[in-house]
Image (cartoon, rainbow, N blue to C red; front, side, top):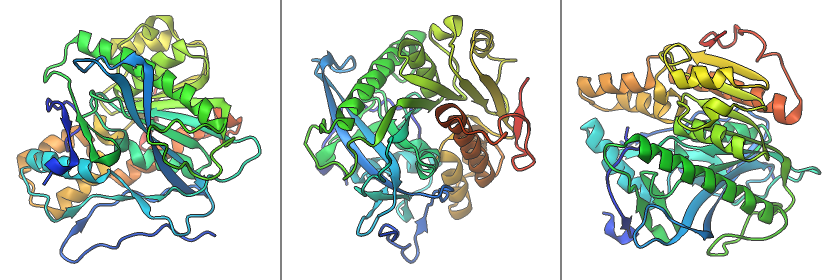
Length: 403
C-alpha cells in the first residue's frame, strides 16, 4: 500500500477529486469490503480533534514562492463521554479518495468496493478531566508518510490515558488534507539524496518544536487553529507538559531522537525501525530511549544504530520483532493482510507486500508493539513499571531482547 515516496506535486482542491455510549459508527454495506483497525486495549474511550496550525515565523522550505509553514495535527485523548459523537475517519474525505486511487494502482486491483477504516475515537468528544493533566506523547510518521498511518498504536496509547499528538510534515507527506478539502501533496523528488533527507529532518525538528509551543498555548486556553474551529471541551489544562514523550516510525523515529537532542522538554523517545541520519548518533542522549526494529534490521547491520546505541547515556533498550518487515509498525500491516484475503491481488504484488510487512500475523504484531510502547511511556512518564521491559515475556514471544 502506498506510503510515501510519491512524486505527485502541488495542491489539489477537493472539487478536483472524482455518558459512556460508543461513538456513532456506520456499519458495513452489503457487497463491500470494510477494513478495520484493532480495538484499543486501554480502559478509556477516546476522543479526537484536528487542528490547522500556521507558523508565521517560518517560510515553507518546499514551496516556491515560499509561504508561511502550515501543518495539520491530530490530538487523541481519553474521554468518558462520546455521546452523539461521530467516529473519526481514518483519513479525511478528499485524502481518502486520492489514497484509494494510489493504493489501487499499486495493488493492481480496483478498490471501488473497499471502505477504509473508521477509528475508535469520537470526533470532538470532551477531554477527560484530570487534576494534573494527561502525559503528552508526540508522533512523527516515516519519510513521506501521513500522520494517520500509525493510528492503531496512537489510539491505544490514548486509551491508556495519554494525550497523543500526531504531526503531518506538509509537502514531505504524500497527502495532507487541510480544512475545506484542500490537499497538499508531496514535493519531494522521486529519488531522494542524503541532502534531501537531511533537509527533511531539519524541517521535522522545527515542526515538532513549533507544535510543542502551540500545545503550551492550548493548555493555557488559547485556540491556535487557523480557522478558529471549536476545540474539545476540557482541553484547557488537560496537557501535563512536564511529562512529554515522543515516538516515530522510520524517519519519524530519527526525528524523535534528533528533537530530543535539541529540546529537553521531551523526556523519553522511541524509534520504530528508523536509521539515525543526524548528529544525535554521535552526540547521544542522556534520557531514556527505546529502539525497536524489524526482523532484518539492527545494530549488527546498521552502523547508525550501533553508533547511536554506544552514545546513549540514559536508560536504553533494543527490541526486535520477529518475522516482521519495516512497515509492520504501521497500519499497513493489518490493512494489507485484510486486503490480501478479500481481493484478487496478483501474486507478485503480494510477495512485494510481504517484504514490507513481514510474515507475522498483524494482530500479534500490533498487540506486541502496543504493549511495549505503553510499558515504556508508563515507566518513564509515569514511574509505573510492570517488568515487561526487564526480560522476555511469554505473552509476547515475537519480541526479542537484543543485548
